Length: 457
Image 1 (cartoon, helix red, strand yellow):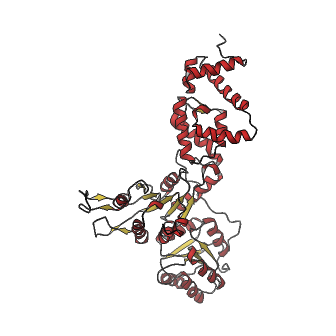
Image 2: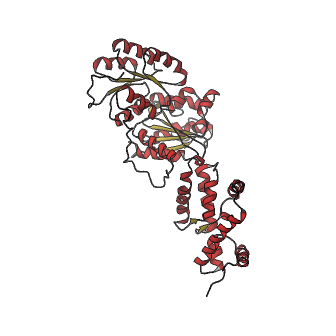
Image 3: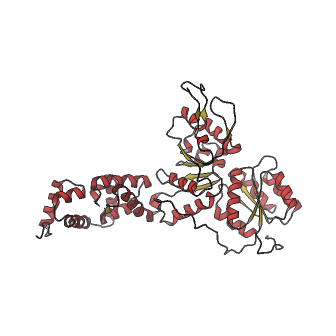
């Protein structure tokens, strides 16, 4: 029940309880941005002191904490403050306890990783805000050049990125290979309070396992054969900024344990050293694997999964955000062709109809190839990789599009280019990226069909 003694014009005070600094930072940043007064506590014991010292409208507590657990804290808090609404945050393994607590009067529970819309709905309910109260979103954050987000799905991802960027919380970015996980990491860092600091990127799948520990944490001289000098690791290089750990699912169990320590207390050791180093760094991680399945199979640590996954941003595949395909294609084309290239009508249909299993990276590669073959002018179907056109033409044919119709579209593009180059066949062939012999064959067919292929002069 929402408190009725609080003046509706004054901000509601919310107590956030979590031993994980990243989780506290996320909730504090998000809720403060929605107009709430937020107080935090890193343990159940400290939370009880806060509750005894000041009026609180809502307590949000993690379930699994050292010392007093969230369930124990809930029961002690409600014994002293019977009207206090309590919202529990729980990992999957603790859901049964959270459900039991709801029978004892807990408001609700949220499963990790937290869904911000679901969180806001529960907070709005418990603090007496109108259901029409909108989620506030800062619209002053400008997308960096080269970021395309025409689709509603991608706009939603970037909205969530903006909501979490100002916190120091860890973010797990998931999605198929090539969807743009690194791009989203760039955006989060650029919108964060650490934007002036470094953004250090590590591809965990590209570095041999026996070298990855040294790459991440550094090593001392003589730590192993070939260590002829001290090396500063990526975590130290990222000090004051952000480290992006790509393909985190490829990390070995031993390194997972070392990474877990950093997420817990922010410290690590260089290889061959006993000196503890504190890491002032925000961690963004990414994986194209389903890490929950990896946890279930025993290949990824459950505790590390929940530490990294304070908030999850799942980037949808390109086939599910069709509105982004052509803007992305034109963006890449402008980069490769210096704004001279353009897509023929037939290529437009092909790009929109293809399923893009390689996602944005495959589209980028296709546009680079097309720009080279076309020499920066009109992009024809001949310039698109054969696997793409073949995969597209099969369903197109099944939809009763005739070969003659496709040929007509391409013929119009060829004639347009011919006129543009004043009927100069050599220049036209070069512009279209096809051989002169091929062009002569196509022109002969067009002439036989009654088209003008010679200069009217």
